[in-house]
Length: 182
Image 1 (cartoon, rainbow, N blue to C red):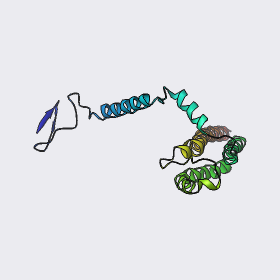
Image 2: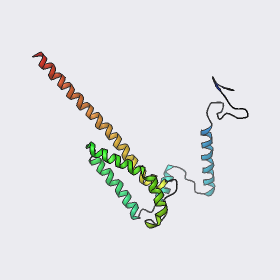
Image 3: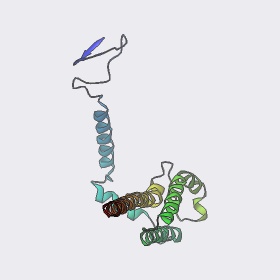
Image 4: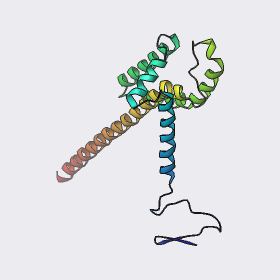
């Protein structure tokens, strides 16, 4: 039995607890240490990104933007955003689009697996790693941003409907009150 502050923690014989004196598990320290080791190795190799801007520049430089399928993907995202913005007041259209977008995001992993096996058929280079970074950035992230916009739009629509219903309720009460007075 180990006393940790005001909490007694049972630790088996021969085992050491996974927390330090301050009560933290040390996981943050491990993650920071691993991150520093990775950056140190990258600096030694001479290709360490120094920040977010460098990461973005490295990503955009690595992508061949002249490939037709990448242009089509970007066009798809632009068209879907435009349609969503134009139809933002039509709740049923938004619901359909929202569920379609959720389905498309859900299909990102199988799509990445398929594309990793068949990239030679449609691309000049292999963008499809097992971790799905490229598909996540180029395909799923814009769709998730669109879904987030739609959720905010749903909240705005719901708030406006609530105000409208309350106004009608107050008008009805006022007219009912006027009828009772007469």
